[in-house]
Amino acid sequence: MRSLTDYLYFNTKTRRAFINITGEVEARVRDSGILEGLCLVNAMHITASVFINDDESGLHQDFEEFLESLAPHEPVARYRHNLTGEDNGDAHIKRTIMGREVVVAVTGGKLDLGPWEQIFYGEFDGLRRKRVLIKIIGE
Amino acid sequence: MRSLTDYLYFNTKTRRAFINITGEVEARVRDSGILEGLCLVNAMHITASVFINDDESGLHQDFEEFLESLAPHEPVARYRHNLTGEDNGDAHIKRTIMGREVVVAVTGGKLDLGPWEQIFYGEFDGLRRKRVLIKIIGE
Amino acid sequence: MRSLTDYLYFNTKTRRAFINITGEVEARVRDSGILEGLCLVNAMHITASVFINDDESGLHQDFEEFLESLAPHEPVARYRHNLTGEDNGDAHIKRTIMGREVVVAVTGGKLDLGPWEQIFYGEFDGLRRKRVLIKIIGE
Image (cartoon, rainbow over all chains, first blue to last red; front, side, top):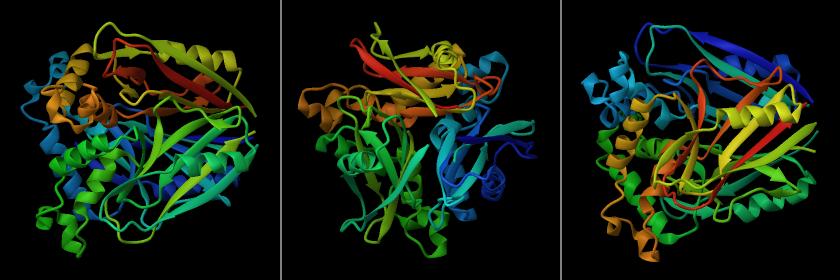
């Protein structure tokens, strides 16, 4: 069995952002030399997400509005978590809805993605340095 | 390490559907000859889901109503994504709530599922051909 | 390839509970002797969840309120599933939002978690015996 472990770093200039990381993940699969296996990609922070969907800006606005309607950022006093001095209670819930991680098959040395599947980093409490983990195992 | 890769195809006659695929996945585990490992099952389309829950029709109606209340199909103009000419903005959100994938342990050559765990394909924008990926790795 | 399979048992004294199981999972990783691999942790029951977030009690109350607002326990007649004689229709939906499983990388013989990542068992229909599966594969 072979494995590769790597980390991506983000420091978004806005509180919330969706960033397409498919190319970065594909590059790690190539580097690993693994032909058949599984690739885990996960946010290492609990107010960020890794998810798969379409790279279409209208859809991303729909997600933004949907998440904000379910767990609005303000008033920050809405969340007990914010009594700790944080203002990111909403971000913990938004990330939960979007998901922490994806597992993607590696087949023939490539990510085995459907035609519109793209891997995104979802930031819900940005303006600080954060990490995503990529772990590939296989042969 | 051994691996098996296979695909299931769907073309539902309704826009939305839940289809039990546990037997299909179990058959692939048997075919693989893998005794100990992990089995990934994921939708390859971004308006469909693979999830685990109970095979109970009342529950499936509850899911349908819950998802429709959170992200109604109509009015289609509610979603910016539909400005692209699509009418499936709701389906992208519904699939996000239900999840893209499941990872199931393979133990002693079988899916290591709890007593009521059944694997479902969730379709939210049907009437077209779609794929699910099954990837099993282990030994 | 090596693997370890183990199960954790729960019988909560309340209908709903969040229990930090990070230490239990870490102990299994140590027992496995696996240095590089993947660790799956999943609820084996369809009204329970395994998820990763912060171990902060205010946040857990925020999750509780958020889930109860989306899928209230009462009136139980709200859910068709409860026509089967169950009263846990809400728990199936709550668990779906929080997720069934997490996959965590094992790096250098340890769970490769971010600074605040903690693994939780989420119970939404307790007062009965339930199981969580831990499966680690790697080398």
